[in-house]
Image 1 (cartoon, rainbow, N blue to C red):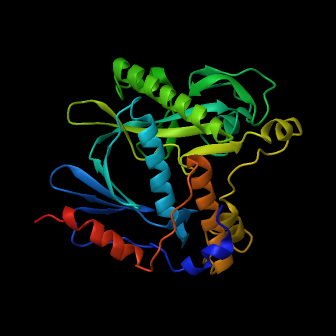
Image 2 (spheres, one colour):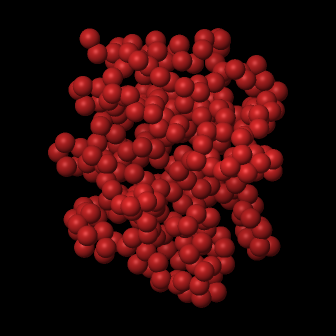
Length: 326
Protein backbone atom coordinates (compact mmCIF):
# COMPACT_ATOMS: atom_id res chain seq x y z
CA UNK A 1 0.00 0.00 0.00
CA UNK A 2 1.31 3.45 -0.96
CA UNK A 3 1.17 6.15 1.72
CA UNK A 4 0.54 9.85 1.14
CA UNK A 5 4.08 10.85 2.12
CA UNK A 6 5.56 8.65 -0.62
CA UNK A 7 3.22 10.29 -3.12
CA UNK A 8 4.16 13.85 -2.17
CA UNK A 9 6.76 14.24 -4.98
CA UNK A 10 4.03 13.48 -7.52
CA UNK A 11 1.74 16.42 -6.69
CA UNK A 12 2.47 17.97 -10.09
CA UNK A 13 2.17 14.62 -11.90
CA UNK A 14 -1.30 15.57 -13.11
CA UNK A 15 -3.13 15.29 -16.41
CA UNK A 16 -5.71 18.06 -16.12
CA UNK A 17 -6.14 18.46 -19.86
CA UNK A 18 -5.41 16.22 -22.83
CA UNK A 19 -6.01 18.41 -25.85
CA UNK A 20 -4.06 16.88 -28.74
CA UNK A 21 -4.58 19.05 -31.83
CA UNK A 22 -2.73 16.54 -33.99
CA UNK A 23 -5.59 14.05 -33.50
CA UNK A 24 -8.92 14.58 -35.31
CA UNK A 25 -12.56 14.88 -34.25
CA UNK A 26 -12.00 15.91 -30.64
CA UNK A 27 -14.84 15.57 -28.12
CA UNK A 28 -14.22 16.72 -24.54
CA UNK A 29 -16.14 14.92 -21.80
CA UNK A 30 -16.14 15.72 -18.10
CA UNK A 31 -13.08 13.59 -17.43
CA UNK A 32 -12.20 11.98 -20.78
CA UNK A 33 -10.92 13.37 -24.06
CA UNK A 34 -12.13 11.47 -27.13
CA UNK A 35 -10.77 11.45 -30.68
CA UNK A 36 -12.42 9.66 -33.59
CA UNK A 37 -9.95 8.38 -36.17
CA UNK A 38 -10.95 8.10 -39.85
CA UNK A 39 -10.70 4.29 -39.78
CA UNK A 40 -13.45 3.82 -37.17
CA UNK A 41 -11.25 3.66 -34.09
CA UNK A 42 -11.74 5.92 -31.07
CA UNK A 43 -8.89 7.16 -28.87
CA UNK A 44 -10.04 7.72 -25.29
CA UNK A 45 -7.72 9.58 -22.92
CA UNK A 46 -8.64 9.48 -19.22
CA UNK A 47 -7.56 12.70 -17.50
CA UNK A 48 -7.16 13.22 -13.76
CA UNK A 49 -10.07 15.64 -13.52
CA UNK A 50 -12.48 15.10 -10.61
CA UNK A 51 -16.03 16.01 -11.53
CA UNK A 52 -18.84 16.65 -9.04
CA UNK A 53 -21.73 19.09 -8.61
CA UNK A 54 -21.83 19.58 -12.40
CA UNK A 55 -18.34 21.10 -12.42
CA UNK A 56 -14.67 20.18 -12.24
CA UNK A 57 -13.41 20.43 -8.66
CA UNK A 58 -9.73 19.64 -9.11
CA UNK A 59 -7.38 17.04 -10.59
CA UNK A 60 -6.06 14.03 -8.66
CA UNK A 61 -2.64 12.57 -9.57
CA UNK A 62 -2.93 9.12 -11.19
CA UNK A 63 -6.76 9.06 -11.16
CA UNK A 64 -7.05 8.62 -14.93
CA UNK A 65 -4.43 5.90 -14.98
CA UNK A 66 -6.04 4.06 -12.06
CA UNK A 67 -9.48 4.00 -13.69
CA UNK A 68 -8.10 2.99 -17.09
CA UNK A 69 -6.07 0.15 -15.62
CA UNK A 70 -8.86 -1.14 -13.35
CA UNK A 71 -11.16 -1.26 -16.37
CA UNK A 72 -8.40 -3.06 -18.28
CA UNK A 73 -8.16 -5.63 -15.49
CA UNK A 74 -11.88 -6.36 -15.78
CA UNK A 75 -12.13 -6.20 -19.57
CA UNK A 76 -9.43 -8.84 -19.84
CA UNK A 77 -11.02 -10.99 -17.12
CA UNK A 78 -14.46 -11.00 -18.79
CA UNK A 79 -13.76 -11.04 -22.53
CA UNK A 80 -14.82 -14.69 -22.68
CA UNK A 81 -18.30 -13.65 -21.49
CA UNK A 82 -18.84 -10.64 -23.73
CA UNK A 83 -16.74 -8.99 -26.44
CA UNK A 84 -15.64 -5.47 -25.49
CA UNK A 85 -14.64 -2.35 -27.38
CA UNK A 86 -10.93 -2.48 -26.49
CA UNK A 87 -8.40 -2.73 -29.33
CA UNK A 88 -5.20 -1.78 -27.51
CA UNK A 89 -3.62 0.26 -24.71
CA UNK A 90 -0.85 2.47 -26.12
CA UNK A 91 -0.46 4.35 -22.81
CA UNK A 92 -1.48 3.82 -19.15
CA UNK A 93 -4.13 6.58 -19.50
CA UNK A 94 -5.34 5.63 -22.98
CA UNK A 95 -7.52 3.00 -24.58
CA UNK A 96 -7.96 2.71 -28.33
CA UNK A 97 -11.38 1.23 -28.96
CA UNK A 98 -13.91 0.33 -31.60
CA UNK A 99 -16.35 3.14 -32.29
CA UNK A 100 -19.83 1.77 -31.57
CA UNK A 101 -23.45 2.72 -31.92
CA UNK A 102 -24.16 3.07 -28.20
CA UNK A 103 -27.28 1.39 -26.88
CA UNK A 104 -29.79 3.97 -25.51
CA UNK A 105 -30.23 1.91 -22.35
CA UNK A 106 -27.86 1.71 -19.39
CA UNK A 107 -27.94 -1.67 -17.65
CA UNK A 108 -27.66 -1.50 -13.86
CA UNK A 109 -27.23 -4.77 -11.96
CA UNK A 110 -27.91 -4.90 -8.21
CA UNK A 111 -27.46 -7.37 -5.36
CA UNK A 112 -28.38 -5.08 -2.44
CA UNK A 113 -31.06 -2.59 -1.39
CA UNK A 114 -28.77 0.41 -1.66
CA UNK A 115 -28.13 3.70 -3.42
CA UNK A 116 -28.59 7.44 -3.05
CA UNK A 117 -29.52 8.71 -6.52
CA UNK A 118 -33.09 9.28 -7.63
CA UNK A 119 -33.09 6.08 -9.71
CA UNK A 120 -31.61 3.83 -6.99
CA UNK A 121 -33.91 1.20 -5.54
CA UNK A 122 -33.38 2.31 -1.91
CA UNK A 123 -34.22 5.93 -2.73
CA UNK A 124 -37.43 4.77 -4.42
CA UNK A 125 -38.26 2.11 -1.80
CA UNK A 126 -38.07 4.49 1.16
CA UNK A 127 -40.72 6.72 -0.44
CA UNK A 128 -43.16 3.85 0.00
CA UNK A 129 -43.12 2.36 -3.49
CA UNK A 130 -42.80 -1.41 -3.69
CA UNK A 131 -42.89 -1.92 -7.45
CA UNK A 132 -40.06 -0.58 -9.60
CA UNK A 133 -38.20 -1.65 -12.74
CA UNK A 134 -40.70 -4.50 -13.14
CA UNK A 135 -39.80 -5.99 -9.73
CA UNK A 136 -41.96 -6.28 -6.61
CA UNK A 137 -40.24 -5.81 -3.24
CA UNK A 138 -41.67 -6.95 0.11
CA UNK A 139 -42.41 -4.61 3.00
CA UNK A 140 -39.93 -4.37 5.84
CA UNK A 141 -36.70 -4.21 3.88
CA UNK A 142 -33.91 -2.02 5.24
CA UNK A 143 -31.05 -0.10 3.66
CA UNK A 144 -28.06 -2.20 2.50
CA UNK A 145 -29.97 -5.49 2.84
CA UNK A 146 -29.05 -8.34 0.50
CA UNK A 147 -31.69 -8.93 -2.15
CA UNK A 148 -33.19 -12.39 -2.61
CA UNK A 149 -31.75 -12.49 -6.13
CA UNK A 150 -29.66 -10.38 -8.47
CA UNK A 151 -31.83 -7.94 -10.43
CA UNK A 152 -31.55 -5.66 -13.46
CA UNK A 153 -32.73 -2.06 -13.12
CA UNK A 154 -32.21 -0.48 -16.57
CA UNK A 155 -32.41 3.24 -17.17
CA UNK A 156 -32.78 5.26 -20.33
CA UNK A 157 -32.17 8.92 -21.04
CA UNK A 158 -35.28 11.10 -21.04
CA UNK A 159 -35.72 12.92 -24.34
CA UNK A 160 -36.50 16.29 -22.76
CA UNK A 161 -34.26 16.84 -19.72
CA UNK A 162 -31.64 14.23 -20.46
CA UNK A 163 -31.83 12.67 -16.99
CA UNK A 164 -31.72 8.95 -16.25
CA UNK A 165 -35.21 7.54 -16.41
CA UNK A 166 -36.55 4.40 -14.75
CA UNK A 167 -37.75 1.80 -17.26
CA UNK A 168 -38.80 -1.86 -17.28
CA UNK A 169 -37.73 -4.64 -19.61
CA UNK A 170 -41.24 -4.74 -21.04
CA UNK A 171 -41.20 -1.03 -21.78
CA UNK A 172 -37.80 -1.28 -23.47
CA UNK A 173 -39.21 -3.79 -25.94
CA UNK A 174 -42.65 -2.16 -26.29
CA UNK A 175 -41.11 1.22 -27.12
CA UNK A 176 -38.81 -0.34 -29.70
CA UNK A 177 -35.68 0.73 -27.84
CA UNK A 178 -34.43 -2.86 -28.22
CA UNK A 179 -35.94 -5.96 -29.74
CA UNK A 180 -36.87 -8.84 -27.44
CA UNK A 181 -33.88 -10.82 -28.73
CA UNK A 182 -31.52 -7.89 -28.09
CA UNK A 183 -32.87 -7.41 -24.57
CA UNK A 184 -32.58 -11.12 -23.80
CA UNK A 185 -28.98 -11.15 -24.99
CA UNK A 186 -27.84 -7.99 -23.24
CA UNK A 187 -29.51 -8.93 -19.95
CA UNK A 188 -27.88 -12.37 -20.07
CA UNK A 189 -24.47 -10.80 -20.72
CA UNK A 190 -24.91 -8.25 -17.93
CA UNK A 191 -25.83 -10.91 -15.38
CA UNK A 192 -22.88 -13.07 -16.44
CA UNK A 193 -20.46 -10.13 -16.18
CA UNK A 194 -21.79 -9.26 -12.73
CA UNK A 195 -21.51 -12.85 -11.53
CA UNK A 196 -17.86 -12.97 -12.66
CA UNK A 197 -17.20 -9.61 -10.99
CA UNK A 198 -18.86 -10.72 -7.74
CA UNK A 199 -16.78 -13.91 -7.65
CA UNK A 200 -13.48 -12.15 -8.34
CA UNK A 201 -14.26 -9.32 -5.90
CA UNK A 202 -14.97 -11.87 -3.16
CA UNK A 203 -11.50 -13.32 -3.71
CA UNK A 204 -10.14 -9.86 -2.90
CA UNK A 205 -12.27 -9.50 0.25
CA UNK A 206 -14.80 -7.23 -1.47
CA UNK A 207 -18.53 -7.26 -2.12
CA UNK A 208 -19.57 -6.03 -5.57
CA UNK A 209 -22.81 -4.35 -4.54
CA UNK A 210 -24.04 -2.97 -7.84
CA UNK A 211 -22.69 -1.71 -11.13
CA UNK A 212 -23.72 -0.14 -14.40
CA UNK A 213 -22.81 -1.35 -17.87
CA UNK A 214 -22.88 0.45 -21.19
CA UNK A 215 -23.21 -1.61 -24.36
CA UNK A 216 -23.12 -0.75 -28.03
CA UNK A 217 -23.55 -2.34 -31.44
CA UNK A 218 -20.69 -2.84 -33.87
CA UNK A 219 -20.97 -2.62 -37.65
CA UNK A 220 -22.36 -6.17 -37.77
CA UNK A 221 -25.00 -5.53 -35.11
CA UNK A 222 -23.16 -7.52 -32.42
CA UNK A 223 -23.59 -6.42 -28.81
CA UNK A 224 -20.27 -5.11 -27.44
CA UNK A 225 -19.38 -3.97 -23.93
CA UNK A 226 -18.22 -0.33 -23.98
CA UNK A 227 -17.10 2.52 -21.70
CA UNK A 228 -15.73 0.97 -18.47
CA UNK A 229 -16.38 -2.05 -16.27
CA UNK A 230 -16.33 -2.57 -12.50
CA UNK A 231 -14.37 0.60 -11.76
CA UNK A 232 -15.06 2.44 -8.49
CA UNK A 233 -16.69 5.19 -10.59
CA UNK A 234 -19.21 2.76 -12.13
CA UNK A 235 -19.59 0.28 -9.27
CA UNK A 236 -20.18 0.16 -5.54
CA UNK A 237 -17.83 -2.00 -3.45
CA UNK A 238 -18.03 -2.87 0.25
CA UNK A 239 -15.48 -4.65 2.43
CA UNK A 240 -16.80 -8.15 3.07
CA UNK A 241 -15.18 -8.70 6.49
CA UNK A 242 -16.98 -5.81 8.20
CA UNK A 243 -20.30 -5.90 6.33
CA UNK A 244 -22.24 -8.39 8.54
CA UNK A 245 -21.44 -6.66 11.82
CA UNK A 246 -22.02 -3.15 10.47
CA UNK A 247 -25.28 -4.17 8.79
CA UNK A 248 -26.53 -5.77 12.00
CA UNK A 249 -25.72 -2.55 13.89
CA UNK A 250 -27.49 -0.43 11.28
CA UNK A 251 -24.22 1.20 10.25
CA UNK A 252 -23.10 2.23 6.78
CA UNK A 253 -20.97 -0.51 5.18
CA UNK A 254 -17.23 0.13 4.95
CA UNK A 255 -16.27 1.13 1.42
CA UNK A 256 -13.64 2.94 -0.60
CA UNK A 257 -14.12 6.48 0.69
CA UNK A 258 -13.50 8.62 -2.39
CA UNK A 259 -16.05 11.22 -1.33
CA UNK A 260 -13.95 13.12 1.16
CA UNK A 261 -12.89 15.68 -1.49
CA UNK A 262 -16.57 16.35 -2.16
CA UNK A 263 -17.22 16.47 1.59
CA UNK A 264 -14.34 18.94 2.10
CA UNK A 265 -15.86 21.23 -0.54
CA UNK A 266 -19.44 20.98 0.78
CA UNK A 267 -18.24 21.89 4.29
CA UNK A 268 -16.84 25.18 2.96
CA UNK A 269 -19.27 26.41 0.31
CA UNK A 270 -22.39 25.73 -1.71
CA UNK A 271 -20.72 23.99 -4.65
CA UNK A 272 -23.69 24.65 -6.94
CA UNK A 273 -23.54 28.43 -6.40
CA UNK A 274 -20.21 29.51 -4.91
CA UNK A 275 -16.67 29.57 -6.20
CA UNK A 276 -14.77 26.43 -5.18
CA UNK A 277 -12.06 27.26 -2.63
CA UNK A 278 -8.56 26.07 -3.38
CA UNK A 279 -8.28 22.46 -2.27
CA UNK A 280 -5.14 21.87 -0.16
CA UNK A 281 -2.34 19.65 -1.41
CA UNK A 282 -2.77 17.22 1.48
CA UNK A 283 -6.42 16.61 0.52
CA UNK A 284 -5.48 16.05 -3.13
CA UNK A 285 -2.68 13.63 -2.25
CA UNK A 286 -4.89 11.69 0.14
CA UNK A 287 -7.37 11.30 -2.72
CA UNK A 288 -4.54 9.99 -4.90
CA UNK A 289 -3.59 7.51 -2.19
CA UNK A 290 -7.18 6.24 -1.99
CA UNK A 291 -7.43 5.75 -5.77
CA UNK A 292 -4.15 3.82 -5.78
CA UNK A 293 -5.34 1.73 -2.83
CA UNK A 294 -8.49 0.92 -4.81
CA UNK A 295 -6.37 -0.28 -7.75
CA UNK A 296 -4.18 -2.47 -5.57
CA UNK A 297 -7.10 -3.95 -3.63
CA UNK A 298 -9.14 -4.82 -6.72
CA UNK A 299 -6.32 -6.11 -8.92
CA UNK A 300 -3.99 -7.56 -6.29
CA UNK A 301 -1.05 -5.84 -7.99
CA UNK A 302 1.19 -2.96 -6.83
CA UNK A 303 0.55 0.33 -8.59
CA UNK A 304 3.49 1.25 -10.89
CA UNK A 305 4.66 4.71 -9.88
CA UNK A 306 6.63 6.54 -12.60
CA UNK A 307 10.39 6.26 -12.53
CA UNK A 308 11.11 9.61 -14.20
CA UNK A 309 9.66 13.11 -14.25
CA UNK A 310 8.33 13.12 -17.82
CA UNK A 311 5.09 15.17 -17.91
CA UNK A 312 2.06 12.92 -18.40
CA UNK A 313 0.86 14.76 -21.50
CA UNK A 314 4.30 14.52 -23.14
CA UNK A 315 4.34 10.77 -22.52
CA UNK A 316 0.85 10.36 -23.96
CA UNK A 317 1.65 12.48 -27.03
CA UNK A 318 4.72 10.34 -27.73
CA UNK A 319 2.78 7.08 -27.31
CA UNK A 320 -0.05 8.31 -29.56
CA UNK A 321 2.22 9.50 -32.38
CA UNK A 322 1.52 6.35 -34.46
CA UNK A 323 -2.21 7.20 -34.44
CA UNK A 324 -1.84 10.66 -35.97
CA UNK A 325 -3.41 10.54 -39.45
CA UNK A 326 -0.94 11.09 -42.28
